[in-house]
Length: 341
Image (cartoon, rainbow, N blue to C red; front, side, top):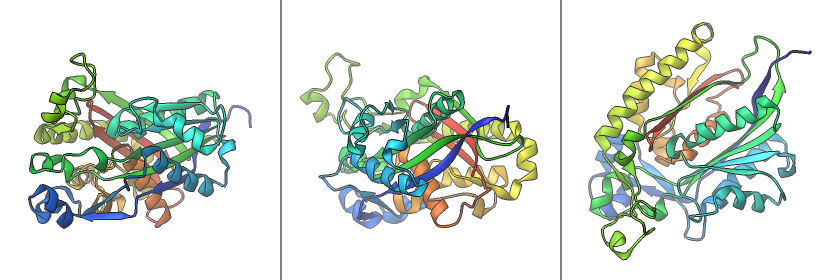
């Protein structure tokens, strides 16, 4: 029908995690501390580590292949791809072109997004804008990380190293005209940032801040490892996500009130305690919040698309669900979203 709104619809999802499972007990043998403490503070029991021969783009490819199969598509059906990661194969170029080459689709536009934990939502926003404007019809969005190759496995690095795992998630969006009043597809995406908090969660080297990308002295002083002011990040994450999710729910109050039982939060998996607190503040029931951090840790840009695929495949997300996304991370950057499945 003429005048029907064009919307980005999820056509397929996929995820991949490496075979190696690393329990808290195994990890504390490297970094010290207590396996029980890790689980109590974060909700994490285990995570996956990639093999030395694996790369971030390879994990993204394996997730993409599963998403294409789920969508009933071939790689040459895609019009563009967006790859979100903080742990790229190389300093440059990014993983997008490496994935394009691995898919064997010559000329496919490839964009890289470097927004860390909110990277998937930033990438999704770009894909949605392309589709709504008619620039592209089918866009692949990938989030993938191999953290295990760049963590400090000493007692000094314990507070960060225990949090992260490896994995990849992929989502295929396609533009469709939907009937007026339909709740299918991307309904809302909102992003934000506050660079004044950048140094509270960052990895300083390699980089040009002091002229030379990286020196022997930088390595000796462990400037090539991530650092985090955990308490500051935790507090900022809670206050920011409460505000942003509240604003999202206010914008769609009538829809959410009418479909409250269909609402499922699929948040970034940074810390289960953060997500439990947010769910409690929102009045969501236990089954309305997707947790995957217990088995995978924090997989940064991969965490939301991984959780989305896992919950779709195990039945926790059913057709007709209203999916609420939320992410906060390094930058500081954040994002929220509301999507009808």
